[in-house]
Length: 543
Ligand code: TEU
Image (tube, rainbow, N blue to C red; front, top):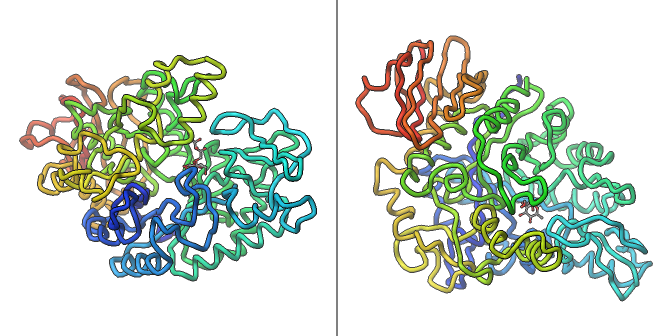
Protein backbone atom coordinates (compact mmCIF):
# COMPACT_ATOMS: atom_id res chain seq x y z
CA UNK A 1 0.00 0.00 0.00
CA UNK A 2 1.27 3.45 -0.82
CA UNK A 3 1.86 5.29 2.44
CA UNK A 4 0.27 8.69 2.97
CA UNK A 5 1.09 11.27 5.62
CA UNK A 6 -2.45 11.21 7.00
CA UNK A 7 -2.33 7.46 7.68
CA UNK A 8 -0.37 8.26 10.82
CA UNK A 9 -2.26 11.42 11.75
CA UNK A 10 -4.54 11.87 14.75
CA UNK A 11 -7.33 14.41 14.33
CA UNK A 12 -9.06 16.52 16.96
CA UNK A 13 -12.45 18.02 16.19
CA UNK A 14 -13.13 21.53 17.44
CA UNK A 15 -16.76 22.65 17.59
CA UNK A 16 -15.90 26.35 17.67
CA UNK A 17 -19.02 27.74 19.25
CA UNK A 18 -18.43 25.61 22.34
CA UNK A 19 -14.64 25.48 22.55
CA UNK A 20 -13.30 28.67 24.13
CA UNK A 21 -14.74 32.18 24.20
CA UNK A 22 -12.06 34.87 24.33
CA UNK A 23 -14.40 37.82 23.77
CA UNK A 24 -17.01 37.24 26.48
CA UNK A 25 -20.02 37.14 24.13
CA UNK A 26 -20.88 33.58 25.16
CA UNK A 27 -19.75 32.02 21.86
CA UNK A 28 -16.41 30.33 21.34
CA UNK A 29 -14.15 32.02 18.80
CA UNK A 30 -10.99 31.70 16.70
CA UNK A 31 -8.78 33.68 19.08
CA UNK A 32 -9.99 31.29 21.76
CA UNK A 33 -8.86 28.31 19.68
CA UNK A 34 -5.47 29.94 19.08
CA UNK A 35 -5.01 30.32 22.82
CA UNK A 36 -5.60 26.59 23.32
CA UNK A 37 -3.23 25.33 20.62
CA UNK A 38 -0.55 24.51 23.17
CA UNK A 39 -3.05 22.36 25.01
CA UNK A 40 -3.80 20.45 21.80
CA UNK A 41 -0.10 20.16 21.06
CA UNK A 42 0.38 18.65 24.49
CA UNK A 43 -2.26 16.06 23.69
CA UNK A 44 -0.22 15.24 20.59
CA UNK A 45 -2.68 15.66 17.71
CA UNK A 46 -1.69 16.52 14.12
CA UNK A 47 -4.83 17.99 12.65
CA UNK A 48 -7.79 20.05 13.78
CA UNK A 49 -11.09 19.45 12.03
CA UNK A 50 -12.76 22.79 12.51
CA UNK A 51 -16.55 22.66 12.35
CA UNK A 52 -17.90 25.60 10.29
CA UNK A 53 -16.79 29.13 11.18
CA UNK A 54 -18.16 30.80 8.05
CA UNK A 55 -20.69 33.61 8.01
CA UNK A 56 -23.96 32.05 9.15
CA UNK A 57 -27.31 32.89 10.69
CA UNK A 58 -26.64 29.85 12.97
CA UNK A 59 -29.92 28.08 12.39
CA UNK A 60 -27.84 24.90 12.47
CA UNK A 61 -24.73 26.25 14.21
CA UNK A 62 -22.83 27.14 11.09
CA UNK A 63 -23.92 24.20 8.93
CA UNK A 64 -26.03 26.86 7.23
CA UNK A 65 -23.47 28.96 5.40
CA UNK A 66 -24.25 32.45 4.12
CA UNK A 67 -20.78 33.11 2.69
CA UNK A 68 -18.16 30.38 2.21
CA UNK A 69 -15.34 32.90 2.09
CA UNK A 70 -16.18 35.03 5.11
CA UNK A 71 -15.83 34.30 8.83
CA UNK A 72 -18.82 34.84 11.07
CA UNK A 73 -18.21 37.85 13.34
CA UNK A 74 -19.10 35.69 16.36
CA UNK A 75 -15.98 33.68 15.59
CA UNK A 76 -13.73 36.55 14.51
CA UNK A 77 -12.32 37.69 11.19
CA UNK A 78 -10.47 36.35 8.21
CA UNK A 79 -7.33 37.77 9.81
CA UNK A 80 -7.98 35.62 12.88
CA UNK A 81 -8.47 32.62 10.63
CA UNK A 82 -5.15 33.27 8.90
CA UNK A 83 -3.54 33.64 12.31
CA UNK A 84 -5.03 30.34 13.45
CA UNK A 85 -3.69 28.56 10.37
CA UNK A 86 -0.23 30.12 10.88
CA UNK A 87 -0.09 29.50 14.64
CA UNK A 88 -1.23 25.92 14.18
CA UNK A 89 1.36 25.38 11.44
CA UNK A 90 4.11 26.60 13.77
CA UNK A 91 3.13 23.72 16.03
CA UNK A 92 2.95 21.24 13.13
CA UNK A 93 -0.82 21.15 13.36
CA UNK A 94 -2.89 21.36 10.18
CA UNK A 95 -6.41 22.76 9.87
CA UNK A 96 -9.19 20.83 8.12
CA UNK A 97 -12.07 23.04 7.06
CA UNK A 98 -15.62 21.76 7.12
CA UNK A 99 -17.19 22.00 3.67
CA UNK A 100 -20.97 22.05 3.69
CA UNK A 101 -21.68 21.52 0.02
CA UNK A 102 -25.09 19.87 -0.05
CA UNK A 103 -26.87 23.05 0.97
CA UNK A 104 -26.26 26.66 1.87
CA UNK A 105 -28.11 29.05 4.15
CA UNK A 106 -31.19 30.76 2.78
CA UNK A 107 -29.21 33.93 3.55
CA UNK A 108 -26.52 33.06 1.00
CA UNK A 109 -26.37 35.61 -1.87
CA UNK A 110 -27.01 32.77 -4.34
CA UNK A 111 -30.28 31.84 -2.68
CA UNK A 112 -31.39 35.42 -2.24
CA UNK A 113 -30.98 35.79 -6.00
CA UNK A 114 -32.48 32.40 -6.73
CA UNK A 115 -35.76 33.12 -4.99
CA UNK A 116 -36.18 36.50 -6.75
CA UNK A 117 -37.68 35.21 -9.96
CA UNK A 118 -37.99 32.07 -12.01
CA UNK A 119 -35.64 33.46 -14.66
CA UNK A 120 -32.98 34.77 -12.30
CA UNK A 121 -29.51 33.52 -13.38
CA UNK A 122 -29.16 31.89 -9.95
CA UNK A 123 -32.54 30.13 -10.09
CA UNK A 124 -30.93 26.81 -11.02
CA UNK A 125 -28.40 26.95 -8.21
CA UNK A 126 -31.16 25.42 -6.07
CA UNK A 127 -33.88 22.82 -6.60
CA UNK A 128 -37.28 24.31 -7.41
CA UNK A 129 -40.45 22.37 -8.27
CA UNK A 130 -44.12 23.19 -8.84
CA UNK A 131 -45.26 20.44 -6.48
CA UNK A 132 -43.74 18.93 -3.33
CA UNK A 133 -43.05 15.18 -3.22
CA UNK A 134 -43.41 12.91 -0.19
CA UNK A 135 -39.76 13.45 0.69
CA UNK A 136 -39.08 14.15 4.40
CA UNK A 137 -36.45 16.43 5.89
CA UNK A 138 -33.82 14.74 8.08
CA UNK A 139 -34.72 17.26 10.79
CA UNK A 140 -38.44 16.40 10.59
CA UNK A 141 -41.31 17.65 8.41
CA UNK A 142 -41.52 17.95 4.64
CA UNK A 143 -38.35 18.44 2.61
CA UNK A 144 -40.14 21.08 0.52
CA UNK A 145 -40.80 24.69 1.41
CA UNK A 146 -43.26 26.85 -0.51
CA UNK A 147 -41.94 30.26 -1.53
CA UNK A 148 -44.77 32.66 -2.32
CA UNK A 149 -42.63 35.12 -4.27
CA UNK A 150 -42.28 32.74 -7.24
CA UNK A 151 -45.00 30.24 -6.27
CA UNK A 152 -42.76 27.19 -6.29
CA UNK A 153 -41.28 24.86 -3.68
CA UNK A 154 -37.57 24.49 -2.93
CA UNK A 155 -35.95 21.33 -1.63
CA UNK A 156 -34.27 21.22 1.79
CA UNK A 157 -33.09 17.88 3.15
CA UNK A 158 -32.30 19.61 6.45
CA UNK A 159 -33.93 22.78 7.90
CA UNK A 160 -35.99 25.01 5.64
CA UNK A 161 -33.27 27.63 6.16
CA UNK A 162 -30.85 25.20 4.47
CA UNK A 163 -31.90 24.99 0.80
CA UNK A 164 -30.18 22.20 -1.15
CA UNK A 165 -27.77 23.25 -3.86
CA UNK A 166 -28.48 21.90 -7.32
CA UNK A 167 -25.44 19.82 -8.27
CA UNK A 168 -27.08 19.09 -11.63
CA UNK A 169 -26.02 22.62 -12.55
CA UNK A 170 -22.34 22.61 -13.63
CA UNK A 171 -22.08 26.26 -12.60
CA UNK A 172 -22.59 25.23 -8.96
CA UNK A 173 -19.70 22.77 -9.13
CA UNK A 174 -17.51 25.42 -10.73
CA UNK A 175 -18.16 28.01 -8.03
CA UNK A 176 -17.65 25.44 -5.27
CA UNK A 177 -14.35 24.28 -6.78
CA UNK A 178 -13.09 27.86 -6.88
CA UNK A 179 -14.06 28.33 -3.27
CA UNK A 180 -12.26 25.13 -2.20
CA UNK A 181 -9.14 26.19 -4.06
CA UNK A 182 -9.27 29.55 -2.35
CA UNK A 183 -9.23 27.84 1.04
CA UNK A 184 -6.38 25.59 -0.05
CA UNK A 185 -4.46 28.74 -0.99
CA UNK A 186 -4.99 30.00 2.56
CA UNK A 187 -2.85 27.10 3.72
CA UNK A 188 -5.36 24.63 5.14
CA UNK A 189 -4.33 20.97 5.33
CA UNK A 190 -7.57 19.42 4.21
CA UNK A 191 -11.32 19.22 4.29
CA UNK A 192 -14.20 17.36 5.90
CA UNK A 193 -17.11 17.13 3.49
CA UNK A 194 -20.49 17.35 5.20
CA UNK A 195 -23.19 14.86 4.08
CA UNK A 196 -21.30 14.47 0.83
CA UNK A 197 -23.26 11.32 -0.08
CA UNK A 198 -26.28 13.51 -0.82
CA UNK A 199 -24.86 15.63 -3.65
CA UNK A 200 -25.55 13.06 -6.39
CA UNK A 201 -29.28 13.09 -5.66
CA UNK A 202 -32.01 12.55 -8.26
CA UNK A 203 -34.81 14.23 -6.46
CA UNK A 204 -37.58 13.41 -8.94
CA UNK A 205 -36.81 9.71 -8.56
CA UNK A 206 -36.80 10.05 -4.78
CA UNK A 207 -33.06 9.27 -4.65
CA UNK A 208 -31.12 11.34 -2.12
CA UNK A 209 -28.21 9.21 -0.82
CA UNK A 210 -25.67 7.62 -3.16
CA UNK A 211 -27.23 8.96 -6.32
CA UNK A 212 -25.78 8.08 -9.73
CA UNK A 213 -23.99 11.43 -10.06
CA UNK A 214 -22.19 11.21 -6.71
CA UNK A 215 -18.92 9.56 -7.71
CA UNK A 216 -18.51 11.38 -11.02
CA UNK A 217 -18.97 14.64 -9.11
CA UNK A 218 -16.35 13.64 -6.54
CA UNK A 219 -13.90 12.62 -9.23
CA UNK A 220 -14.44 15.94 -10.90
CA UNK A 221 -13.86 17.71 -7.58
CA UNK A 222 -10.69 15.72 -7.07
CA UNK A 223 -9.34 16.79 -10.45
CA UNK A 224 -10.27 20.42 -9.84
CA UNK A 225 -9.21 20.72 -6.19
CA UNK A 226 -7.32 17.86 -4.56
CA UNK A 227 -5.09 16.33 -7.23
CA UNK A 228 -1.33 16.58 -6.66
CA UNK A 229 -1.80 18.43 -3.38
CA UNK A 230 -0.89 17.05 0.04
CA UNK A 231 -4.45 17.48 1.27
CA UNK A 232 -6.44 15.12 3.46
CA UNK A 233 -10.15 14.73 2.76
CA UNK A 234 -12.81 12.92 4.74
CA UNK A 235 -16.39 12.52 3.63
CA UNK A 236 -19.33 12.26 6.00
CA UNK A 237 -21.31 9.30 4.63
CA UNK A 238 -24.06 8.00 6.89
CA UNK A 239 -25.09 5.27 4.49
CA UNK A 240 -21.66 3.90 3.62
CA UNK A 241 -21.15 0.16 3.38
CA UNK A 242 -17.64 -1.26 2.92
CA UNK A 243 -18.30 -1.52 -0.82
CA UNK A 244 -19.37 2.12 -1.02
CA UNK A 245 -16.46 3.21 1.17
CA UNK A 246 -14.06 1.71 -1.35
CA UNK A 247 -15.65 3.76 -4.11
CA UNK A 248 -14.83 6.90 -2.15
CA UNK A 249 -11.46 6.04 -0.69
CA UNK A 250 -9.68 3.65 -3.06
CA UNK A 251 -6.66 5.80 -4.00
CA UNK A 252 -6.87 4.49 -7.57
CA UNK A 253 -10.28 6.13 -8.00
CA UNK A 254 -9.06 9.59 -6.95
CA UNK A 255 -11.96 10.79 -4.84
CA UNK A 256 -11.39 11.18 -1.08
CA UNK A 257 -8.79 10.06 1.48
CA UNK A 258 -11.36 8.34 3.71
CA UNK A 259 -14.96 8.46 4.87
CA UNK A 260 -16.77 8.44 8.18
CA UNK A 261 -18.99 5.38 8.15
CA UNK A 262 -21.75 5.37 10.80
CA UNK A 263 -22.76 1.74 10.95
CA UNK A 264 -21.44 1.40 14.51
CA UNK A 265 -22.75 4.82 15.50
CA UNK A 266 -26.35 3.89 14.70
CA UNK A 267 -26.14 0.34 16.00
CA UNK A 268 -28.58 0.86 18.87
CA UNK A 269 -31.09 3.02 17.03
CA UNK A 270 -34.75 2.03 17.11
CA UNK A 271 -36.25 0.80 13.80
CA UNK A 272 -39.00 3.41 13.94
CA UNK A 273 -37.88 6.12 16.35
CA UNK A 274 -34.17 5.93 15.49
CA UNK A 275 -32.01 7.66 18.05
CA UNK A 276 -34.97 9.02 20.01
CA UNK A 277 -35.56 5.56 21.47
CA UNK A 278 -32.22 3.75 21.57
CA UNK A 279 -32.09 -0.01 22.18
CA UNK A 280 -29.85 -1.68 24.79
CA UNK A 281 -26.16 -1.75 23.93
CA UNK A 282 -25.05 -4.99 22.32
CA UNK A 283 -21.29 -5.53 22.43
CA UNK A 284 -21.37 -8.57 20.14
CA UNK A 285 -23.06 -6.50 17.42
CA UNK A 286 -20.58 -3.65 17.89
CA UNK A 287 -17.63 -6.04 17.59
CA UNK A 288 -19.11 -7.53 14.45
CA UNK A 289 -19.59 -4.16 12.74
CA UNK A 290 -16.20 -2.76 13.68
CA UNK A 291 -14.47 -5.98 12.71
CA UNK A 292 -16.14 -5.91 9.33
CA UNK A 293 -14.72 -2.42 8.80
CA UNK A 294 -11.30 -3.31 10.19
CA UNK A 295 -10.94 -6.15 7.72
CA UNK A 296 -12.50 -4.58 4.67
CA UNK A 297 -9.66 -2.56 3.14
CA UNK A 298 -6.57 -3.91 1.53
CA UNK A 299 -4.86 -0.82 0.26
CA UNK A 300 -8.12 -0.02 -1.53
CA UNK A 301 -9.47 2.34 1.08
CA UNK A 302 -8.85 3.67 4.57
CA UNK A 303 -10.85 3.86 7.81
CA UNK A 304 -11.68 6.94 9.84
CA UNK A 305 -12.05 5.88 13.49
CA UNK A 306 -14.38 7.72 15.85
CA UNK A 307 -16.81 7.29 18.72
CA UNK A 308 -17.86 10.90 18.92
CA UNK A 309 -18.55 14.07 17.01
CA UNK A 310 -20.84 17.07 17.38
CA UNK A 311 -23.86 15.00 16.27
CA UNK A 312 -23.44 12.05 18.64
CA UNK A 313 -23.88 11.58 22.37
CA UNK A 314 -20.76 11.24 24.53
CA UNK A 315 -19.27 7.74 24.34
CA UNK A 316 -18.66 7.46 28.08
CA UNK A 317 -22.36 8.07 28.77
CA UNK A 318 -23.55 6.07 25.81
CA UNK A 319 -21.76 2.74 26.16
CA UNK A 320 -19.51 3.29 29.14
CA UNK A 321 -20.36 4.22 32.70
CA UNK A 322 -20.29 7.93 33.35
CA UNK A 323 -20.63 7.56 37.12
CA UNK A 324 -18.53 5.14 39.13
CA UNK A 325 -16.31 4.08 36.21
CA UNK A 326 -16.26 7.29 34.23
CA UNK A 327 -12.51 7.61 33.84
CA UNK A 328 -11.84 3.92 33.48
CA UNK A 329 -14.55 3.27 30.91
CA UNK A 330 -13.53 6.36 28.92
CA UNK A 331 -9.99 5.02 28.80
CA UNK A 332 -11.33 1.64 27.73
CA UNK A 333 -13.14 3.08 24.72
CA UNK A 334 -10.09 5.18 23.88
CA UNK A 335 -7.89 2.08 23.98
CA UNK A 336 -10.23 0.04 21.79
CA UNK A 337 -10.43 2.74 19.13
CA UNK A 338 -6.81 3.87 19.10
CA UNK A 339 -5.68 0.26 18.93
CA UNK A 340 -7.39 -0.14 15.56
CA UNK A 341 -6.27 0.51 11.99
CA UNK A 342 -7.28 3.86 10.53
CA UNK A 343 -7.06 7.55 11.32
CA UNK A 344 -8.44 8.29 14.81
CA UNK A 345 -10.63 11.32 15.46
CA UNK A 346 -11.10 12.77 18.95
CA UNK A 347 -14.01 15.10 19.63
CA UNK A 348 -13.42 18.02 21.99
CA UNK A 349 -13.96 17.03 25.61
CA UNK A 350 -13.66 13.31 24.84
CA UNK A 351 -10.06 13.49 26.09
CA UNK A 352 -11.31 14.48 29.58
CA UNK A 353 -14.35 12.15 29.44
CA UNK A 354 -17.00 14.84 29.32
CA UNK A 355 -20.47 13.35 29.71
CA UNK A 356 -23.99 13.77 28.35
CA UNK A 357 -26.13 16.42 30.00
CA UNK A 358 -29.73 16.31 31.36
CA UNK A 359 -31.55 19.62 31.30
CA UNK A 360 -35.03 19.52 32.88
CA UNK A 361 -36.64 21.74 30.33
CA UNK A 362 -36.70 21.47 26.56
CA UNK A 363 -36.19 25.24 26.59
CA UNK A 364 -32.61 24.76 27.72
CA UNK A 365 -31.80 22.89 24.53
CA UNK A 366 -30.83 24.73 21.37
CA UNK A 367 -30.59 22.16 18.58
CA UNK A 368 -32.99 22.52 15.67
CA UNK A 369 -32.99 18.73 15.24
CA UNK A 370 -34.47 18.37 18.75
CA UNK A 371 -37.06 21.07 18.20
CA UNK A 372 -38.23 19.88 14.80
CA UNK A 373 -38.39 16.23 15.86
CA UNK A 374 -40.34 17.17 18.98
CA UNK A 375 -42.82 19.00 16.81
CA UNK A 376 -43.14 16.01 14.49
CA UNK A 377 -43.08 13.07 16.92
CA UNK A 378 -44.65 14.49 20.07
CA UNK A 379 -46.90 17.32 18.93
CA UNK A 380 -48.12 16.24 15.48
CA UNK A 381 -47.87 12.44 15.19
CA UNK A 382 -48.00 11.78 18.95
CA UNK A 383 -45.92 8.67 18.37
CA UNK A 384 -43.80 9.46 21.44
CA UNK A 385 -44.87 11.03 24.72
CA UNK A 386 -43.10 14.09 26.09
CA UNK A 387 -41.48 11.87 28.72
CA UNK A 388 -40.29 9.32 26.17
CA UNK A 389 -38.92 12.05 23.98
CA UNK A 390 -36.98 13.60 26.89
CA UNK A 391 -35.43 10.19 27.57
CA UNK A 392 -34.39 10.14 23.91
CA UNK A 393 -32.90 13.61 24.27
CA UNK A 394 -30.91 12.54 27.34
CA UNK A 395 -29.58 9.50 25.55
CA UNK A 396 -28.96 10.79 22.05
CA UNK A 397 -29.46 14.51 21.44
CA UNK A 398 -26.71 16.35 19.65
CA UNK A 399 -26.58 19.00 22.38
CA UNK A 400 -25.03 16.35 24.66
CA UNK A 401 -21.86 16.90 22.69
CA UNK A 402 -22.26 20.63 22.32
CA UNK A 403 -22.28 21.93 25.89
CA UNK A 404 -19.30 24.24 26.41
CA UNK A 405 -15.86 22.74 26.86
CA UNK A 406 -15.04 22.41 30.54
CA UNK A 407 -11.68 24.12 31.10
CA UNK A 408 -11.62 24.60 34.89
CA UNK A 409 -13.84 24.87 37.96
CA UNK A 410 -14.45 28.64 37.74
CA UNK A 411 -17.83 29.99 36.64
CA UNK A 412 -19.07 28.72 33.26
CA UNK A 413 -16.34 26.09 33.45
CA UNK A 414 -13.85 28.76 32.39
CA UNK A 415 -15.40 28.66 28.90
CA UNK A 416 -16.65 32.26 28.85
CA UNK A 417 -16.81 35.42 30.94
CA UNK A 418 -20.29 36.00 29.52
CA UNK A 419 -23.50 34.00 29.31
CA UNK A 420 -22.73 30.83 27.31
CA UNK A 421 -24.95 30.25 24.25
CA UNK A 422 -25.77 26.79 25.67
CA UNK A 423 -25.70 25.94 29.36
CA UNK A 424 -22.59 24.37 30.80
CA UNK A 425 -22.87 20.80 32.08
CA UNK A 426 -23.25 21.16 35.88
CA UNK A 427 -20.59 18.51 36.47
CA UNK A 428 -17.80 20.92 35.44
CA UNK A 429 -16.40 21.44 38.96
CA UNK A 430 -15.31 17.81 38.87
CA UNK A 431 -14.77 17.21 35.14
CA UNK A 432 -12.51 19.81 33.57
CA UNK A 433 -9.21 20.23 31.76
CA UNK A 434 -7.34 21.79 34.68
CA UNK A 435 -8.21 18.84 36.92
CA UNK A 436 -7.24 16.39 34.19
CA UNK A 437 -3.88 18.04 33.62
CA UNK A 438 -3.17 17.92 37.35
CA UNK A 439 -3.81 14.20 37.63
CA UNK A 440 -1.18 11.90 36.10
CA UNK A 441 -3.83 9.12 36.00
CA UNK A 442 -6.37 11.18 34.08
CA UNK A 443 -8.12 10.25 30.85
CA UNK A 444 -6.17 13.07 29.16
CA UNK A 445 -2.83 11.38 29.77
CA UNK A 446 -4.25 8.07 28.58
CA UNK A 447 -5.13 9.66 25.25
CA UNK A 448 -1.71 11.28 25.18
CA UNK A 449 -0.08 7.87 25.61
CA UNK A 450 -2.24 6.25 22.94
CA UNK A 451 -1.37 9.02 20.48
CA UNK A 452 2.32 8.78 21.32
CA UNK A 453 2.31 5.01 20.74
CA UNK A 454 0.86 5.54 17.28
CA UNK A 455 3.07 8.46 16.38
CA UNK A 456 6.47 7.07 17.22
CA UNK A 457 8.39 4.24 18.75
CA UNK A 458 8.51 0.52 18.27
CA UNK A 459 4.82 -0.14 17.63
CA UNK A 460 3.94 2.83 15.50
CA UNK A 461 3.94 0.98 12.16
CA UNK A 462 2.03 -1.88 13.69
CA UNK A 463 -0.70 0.37 15.04
CA UNK A 464 -1.02 2.19 11.73
CA UNK A 465 -0.68 -0.68 9.24
CA UNK A 466 -0.90 -3.94 11.17
CA UNK A 467 -3.59 -6.48 10.38
CA UNK A 468 -6.54 -6.93 12.72
CA UNK A 469 -8.09 -10.14 14.00
CA UNK A 470 -11.04 -10.38 16.38
CA UNK A 471 -10.89 -12.91 19.24
CA UNK A 472 -13.89 -14.27 21.17
CA UNK A 473 -16.47 -12.86 18.72
CA UNK A 474 -19.41 -14.21 20.72
CA UNK A 475 -18.27 -13.08 24.14
CA UNK A 476 -20.89 -10.65 25.43
CA UNK A 477 -18.53 -8.62 27.67
CA UNK A 478 -15.01 -8.98 26.31
CA UNK A 479 -13.69 -7.07 23.30
CA UNK A 480 -10.34 -8.57 22.33
CA UNK A 481 -8.36 -8.35 19.12
CA UNK A 482 -4.89 -8.95 17.75
CA UNK A 483 -2.84 -6.60 15.65
CA UNK A 484 0.09 -7.99 13.69
CA UNK A 485 2.84 -6.44 11.59
CA UNK A 486 5.91 -8.31 10.40
CA UNK A 487 7.15 -10.19 13.50
CA UNK A 488 5.31 -8.04 16.05
CA UNK A 489 1.99 -8.81 17.68
CA UNK A 490 -0.15 -6.77 20.04
CA UNK A 491 -3.20 -7.97 21.93
CA UNK A 492 -5.87 -5.47 22.93
CA UNK A 493 -8.24 -6.88 25.52
CA UNK A 494 -11.04 -5.04 27.29
CA UNK A 495 -13.75 -5.89 29.78
CA UNK A 496 -16.74 -3.88 28.61
CA UNK A 497 -18.81 -4.54 31.72
CA UNK A 498 -19.26 -3.67 35.37
CA UNK A 499 -18.29 -7.08 36.67
CA UNK A 500 -14.97 -8.90 36.99
CA UNK A 501 -14.13 -11.25 34.15
CA UNK A 502 -11.88 -14.29 34.05
CA UNK A 503 -10.69 -15.72 30.79
CA UNK A 504 -8.03 -17.86 29.31
CA UNK A 505 -6.25 -16.84 26.13
CA UNK A 506 -3.76 -19.06 24.39
CA UNK A 507 -1.00 -16.46 24.08
CA UNK A 508 2.14 -15.51 25.95
CA UNK A 509 2.56 -11.94 27.03
CA UNK A 510 5.99 -10.34 26.77
CA UNK A 511 5.08 -6.93 28.13
CA UNK A 512 2.15 -4.76 29.17
CA UNK A 513 2.21 -1.78 26.83
CA UNK A 514 -0.74 0.05 28.34
CA UNK A 515 -3.18 -0.63 31.17
CA UNK A 516 -6.03 1.64 32.23
CA UNK A 517 -5.72 0.38 35.78
CA UNK A 518 -2.71 0.83 38.00
CA UNK A 519 -1.73 -2.59 39.21
CA UNK A 520 1.34 -4.63 39.99
CA UNK A 521 2.94 -6.10 36.86
CA UNK A 522 2.70 -9.80 37.71
CA UNK A 523 -1.02 -9.72 38.30
CA UNK A 524 -1.93 -9.27 34.68
CA UNK A 525 0.69 -11.17 32.77
CA UNK A 526 -0.84 -14.65 32.75
CA UNK A 527 -3.03 -14.63 29.66
CA UNK A 528 -4.11 -18.22 30.30
CA UNK A 529 -5.58 -17.09 33.62
CA UNK A 530 -6.47 -13.51 32.99
CA UNK A 531 -8.54 -11.53 35.43
CA UNK A 532 -9.99 -8.24 34.34
CA UNK A 533 -11.61 -5.70 36.63
CA UNK A 534 -14.71 -3.76 35.50
CA UNK A 535 -13.87 -1.71 32.38
CA UNK A 536 -10.26 -2.73 32.46
CA UNK A 537 -8.45 -2.51 29.12
CA UNK A 538 -4.91 -3.65 28.44
CA UNK A 539 -2.59 -3.69 25.44
CA UNK A 540 -0.07 -6.52 25.59
CA UNK A 541 3.00 -7.12 23.52
CA UNK A 542 2.95 -10.84 22.68
CA UNK A 543 5.90 -13.21 22.44
O1 TEU B 1 -24.89 15.82 9.68
C1 TEU B 1 -25.62 15.00 8.83
C2 TEU B 1 -26.72 14.29 9.41
O2 TEU B 1 -27.36 13.58 8.70
C3 TEU B 1 -26.99 14.48 10.86
O3 TEU B 1 -27.84 15.55 10.98
C4 TEU B 1 -27.55 13.25 11.43
O4 TEU B 1 -28.53 12.71 10.63
C5 TEU B 1 -28.15 13.46 12.75
O5 TEU B 1 -27.31 14.21 13.57
C6 TEU B 1 -28.39 12.16 13.42
O6 TEU B 1 -29.48 12.31 14.23
C7 TEU B 1 -24.22 16.89 9.13
C8 TEU B 1 -23.59 17.72 10.22
O7 TEU B 1 -22.62 16.96 10.88
C9 TEU B 1 -24.68 18.22 11.12
O8 TEU B 1 -24.19 18.89 12.23
C10 TEU B 1 -25.54 19.12 10.28
O9 TEU B 1 -26.65 19.53 11.04
C11 TEU B 1 -26.05 18.43 9.03
O10 TEU B 1 -25.04 17.72 8.34
C12 TEU B 1 -26.56 19.46 8.06
O11 TEU B 1 -25.50 20.20 7.54
